[in-house]
Image (cartoon, rainbow, N blue to C red; front, side):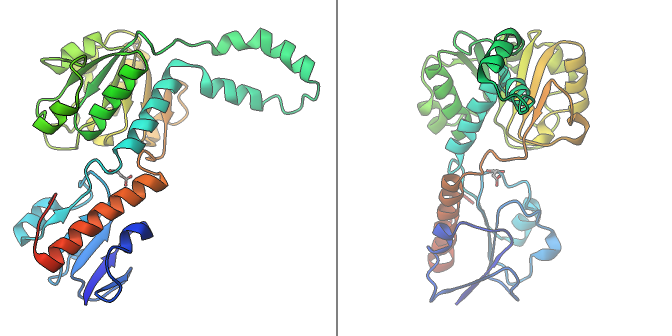
Length: 306
Ligand code: MLT
C-alpha cells in the first residue's frame, strides 16, 4: 500500500487514477511514500525520509525546494502544458480588458441600479459611453516572451484575432518550435521585442535568470503606451520599475494574475487572484497527468517529467 500525503485539494478525476486497493491518500499521514500538492509552499522539514517522490498538479515547481529534492534523490513530477489552455484563455481575456473599457463600463452600469426607466437609462448611456471607448486588438502587435506550451498557444490565438505576433525565447525547444506558425516573428533580443510591441505577455518560469527580468532598463525600451501582461510568475517583474513606467507613460496598463499589494487600487492596473489555471478542466488535466506519473514511478520505477 502506497501512502500519499495530499497537501492541497486535487481533482478526484486525478486521484481516482491511483487504485484504491494500492493507495492510501490523506492530508495528514505518517511516513508517506509520496507528496501530492498544488500551491502549498513545501518546506524541506515537511519531506520525511520515507518520501520517494513529490508531484505537483501544475506547471511551475517554484513552491518546491528543488535543489534539496535533487540532493535527496527525490524526483519531482509536474504537469507542463496540462493547464496551458486555461491560462491562454485568461490571457486573451486580459488582452480584451487591456484594449476595451470593459471594467470601467461594467462598474459604471452597476452605479445605475437606482434607475428604473429603461429609456432614460439608454439616453444617459448614449452620452456617457464615449468614456468607455477602446481599440481593437486586430492589427496591434503582441510580443510573447517565452514560447513554450502556454506562449505558443497564445501566439496562435492572437494570430487568429488578427494581431501581429512577435516572440522571444532564448531556450526555444524543438517541440515548441514545431507548434509555432512561421508568421510569429522571432526577435533576437528582449529589448527589440519591447520596442515593437503594443501588448507584451510574459510566459517564463521563475529562475535566477528570469527573476526581476522586467526591470527599469527593459521597460525604458517600451513603445510608449504599451500594455504589459504577467500571468507567469510575480517574481519576473520588478514592481517598482512597473510603477515608474506607468507613472512616466511608458506603460499604459499592467495586467497581472498576482494581487500585488502595492498596486491595489490603481486605475491603470488590473490584478487577478492567480486564477490562470483555475478551471475544472485544467485542474483535472493536471491531476490526471501527475497521478499517472506518480503511479508509474511508484509501481514501475519509470520517471517522466521529473
Ligand atoms: C502553474 O504553475 O501551473 C500554476 O501556478 C497553476 C496553479 O495555479 O496551481
